[in-house]
Image (cartoon, rainbow, N blue to C red; front, side):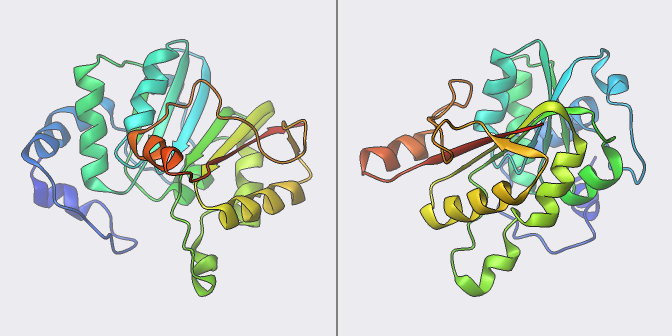
Length: 228
């Protein structure tokens, strides 16, 4: 698979693409056919891609995949699906999957909204992870935030009863925005005893960027809501 072929796969929007390293390009060519799932406009049976029936967790916008592969590696009895459009990030995650022999993670390079809406059956997912999404901090850009009422409603539709949505951000105004939107979703219940945020769950790794921010006094907010 050439780099030009990979670039043509995404047609629905313009990507702010970073430079692809030789290692990432090699990983895309060698390992995307192994770990990748092609986008389809119809629901799919994920058992066919993992070779087993198991709990499934989807991470949306995994960036460079640092937390993604570690979570999957540390939880081999759960299957993970990562969705990302950023080509260098997909390549970086594929490198980690091969290096660390992670077998319970698959990748889709496509718009997450379309993937979840068209490919994922209702009441089938154990959890959704969205860690540090773009905050679009200017007020006029808030409409571009991925956490919106209609999107959270879609996620809740795909969760089975008892499933969860885990969000994390280092922007306080976005944390407040997230909390307000999730509180409006009648199918979801906040797992926080105080009705707002929780301490970082052990399964979510502390990234170098996040740790540096904490050392500088910056806050991080985690939210976990469960489907009732």
